[in-house]
Image (cartoon, rainbow, N blue to C red; front, side):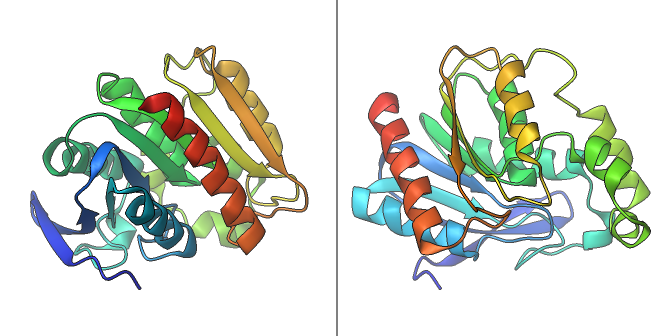
Length: 232
């Protein structure tokens, strides 16, 4: 686990746990996936990358997950988006590269839409925009019961893939071609919908949804290093 101190941001009636390090710009903001947290393999690897590069880095837990307070069953996409905006506005400064894993990739796109002056580049790792739409339609009964109705409704309100996604900054998508949770077709669809002229998709042969194997982590970090060169 990272040596960066665990701290808390007061948000409404909740305490959002976060770990942040000071450093150069552009800073990195990491958004976890659904039912995940900031202590995962990818988050730790990206934090270590930020330390080596001397970059500012912020990662946090949505309410109801990890070390944050709150009830996970009450979590919705719009609530976690609201929390992500609060974290971006109050805990980070200057230009950012926003990195989102799975559902976090969906939220990252919304951050880029709402804070274009702050988000210099975006990296989606097995990004899952609109998963309440295509994911719920194909899930079995047990999987559907894991997504509450309020979460599903909020996700439907925040869908992006039906129209142009008005993001103009560089976007990189990293996706495994063996991902059984988020089909690589979702990444292709997102790439086609993004307005930016600088969108690239890196396909990892044999990669599943987690993309946490050493070779997969190294591929992600190489993509991030390339974005950093552009965003400086």
